[in-house]
Structure formats: C-alpha cells, structure tokens
Length: 307
Ligand code: PSU
Image (cartoon, rainbow, N blue to C red):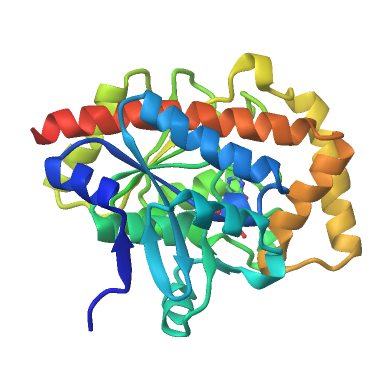
C-alpha cells in the first residue's frame, strides 16, 4: 500500500535539493492555543523559519491525507476548527485517522513520525509532553517520550511543559536513551520559565554541534532523536516563582473536574491562559518563535553536513 502522504511542491523541491527544511506540528494550533492567536502564531513561525533560510513544513492529517506542508487556506481551516472536530493524533491513532479519512492534528510524536517519513530531520515546537504529576498512580506518560527514543528527528522545544513532573520526565528520557540538550545554559528550561531548578543532562551552545551530534548518532546506528531545550527569551518569560502557584491551581481544577487522558494538556493550557490573563499565551508564542529560529539554524547546519 502506498503511503497517504502529500508533500507540497515547495517542501518537495527543498528536500530534493538537500536544502534546510524545518517541520512543525499542528496540535499546538488546534489544541494548544485559541483562535485567532493560533493562526497568527502558525503564520509567524513559518515566516521566522523562512527568515532563517529554511523551508517550513507544517504537518497535519486532512481528510485522511498526511500533509507535509500546509497551504494558507488549509492552515486557516484547521485553526478555526472546534477541538471536538479534530483528532489529536499520536503514534497510536495516526493510521486510524488516515484510514478513515478523518482530519487530525499531529502531536510531537505523530509529527516526528511524519517528518521522518518525508525525510525531514528537524522539528520545532513549544513544549513536549512528558510524565504527568501523579504518574506513579495514573501512569500518564506522554507518547512523545517513546517517540523520541525511536524516531531520528531533532526536536527543538522550550523544555517540557511546567505542568508536568520535570524530574520524572528527565528520568524516563534517560532510561529511553534520549539526549536532552539544554541550549546555551546548564539548567533545563521549563517552558514559560528559563529555569526549572534541574540541571540538564547535556549542554550545547552551538547549532553546528547539535547538527553534528544527530549525524554521529545516525552513523553509530543508534535509533531515536535528540531533544533540544531552548530557554524562552528573558523578556518573554514568566519566572518560576510566579507561574508555579498558577500551575498548581490549574492542576487542582483539572482534578476537580476529572479531566483525563488527551484532554489534560489542552485543559491546563487553557486554564493557565485564563489565570494569567493571557500572559501565558504571549509567552508560549514567543518561545515557539524562538525555537523556530534555532531550528532553522540547526537545519542549515544539517544541510551543510549533508553537502
Ligand atoms: N507545545 C505547545 N503547545 C502544545 C503542544 C506543544 O506550546 O499544545 C502539544 C504537542 O503537540 C505535544 C502535546 O505533543 O502538546 C502534548 O500532549 P500530551 O501531554 O497529551 O501528550
């Protein structure tokens, strides 16, 4: 059976020529931010990647076809769709969505799978999923972590979202053999904040080294990707001490309303948006833009190594 994959001519041409390409996810658009800020974010992120000399490829499943690169109309349709009409796709449900002709947004895990299928090795997002607090009884661990262990894509994020248990997330990533690389600082950044209080297992200061590490990993036949944790710019951050009680409040609200499974992360992001009066969303947008800039630099170095 052929793969239900449609690559835009622009992305296909860039891949063919070995030019830098950066993939982007769509769950952040449909489940991570409200309309119209989500659409504006998606457009600005693509523009940022172009400004950095790379071609953006936003990934989603539209009517059963995996789209590598979205045109403006499709992006707007996705951004306007009510969450209930868009599947939130991970490794488990990507094929079901495609087989049944449905539309779905790709999470970090599903985007990695699609990017790799298309031949794209670099992916920028906001924050990966991870080990949820209380996972020792709920077993709620994002499929993003397992994907990083098996799919060779370098994922640039701003750390795992601070709604998670970050030290358990680091432990699981270590067990899975995923390199967690803080960019330009020793501490693991925590999404809205530059600091988490945890030292990252690895630190790199130069996109060239990051691109080379991916190439060496492939040469050594070690499966899986790399996680680059890029701290939010100082002027956009919400310091840890400020966001921590808000996260606690949002988690308590989620527990009271018995929010579970795939609904947890979107609920918490929305609740934190309300509790910070929109500041968490501005920070989220700035950190994604910052990750897009770094991803374009890493993709450019990766292209140079291939040449
Ligand atoms: N980054 C953001 N906002 C988001 C996400 C990432 O700034 O909403 C999405 C990604 O798609 C990631 C998902 O895979 O959140 C994690 O969801 P979960 O915790 O249910 O695995």
